[in-house]
Amino acid sequence: MAAGRLPPCAGRTSEDGNRHLASKVLVGVEPGDESMRSIPVDVSGLKVMATGVTPVSINKYVDGVRQEATEIDDMGRPLVRVSLFVLTTEGAEEIRVKVPSANVPKELGPLSAVSLVGLVAAPYVNNNRVAVSFRAESISATK
Image 1 (cartoon, rainbow, N blue to C red):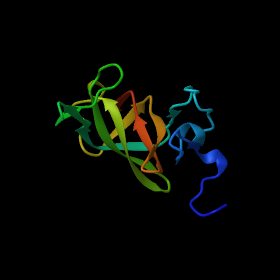
Image 2: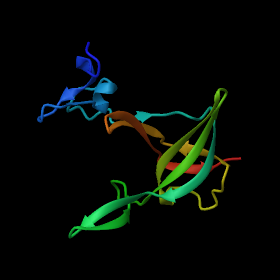
Image 3: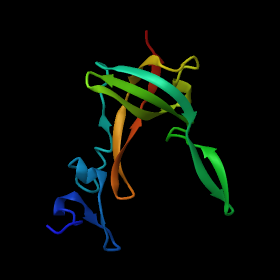
Image 4: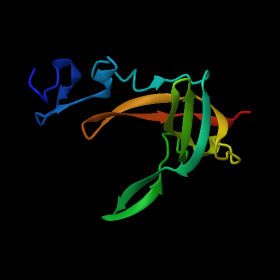
């Protein structure tokens, strides 16, 4: 296979003739099948610590003028991004998880131990690179 070329199973050709990676292809789901848009993640056996909470802002354009707004989920709930350290026996990884703001405790301080409910990973393509977005239904402080 020539350098820079994708294997036939690793992408799809769009209407403009360009090859694009698709997260559905990466997880083995046929195009048009919406059953596997996210992958459940179990971190119950790991120590997870919160390091910060920030609102998730997006840019909206009204009459050609950029306005910053807070991202909302499909139920209309504003989202926040919670930075977390996931500690394993091999080390620590930092991940950022989007959570509805109402489901994040106000007293969540830096390096607080937390547990996650409904954590899912959603692969996507950004600038021809595969990336992963994390979402959770709620976060709660643990002891």
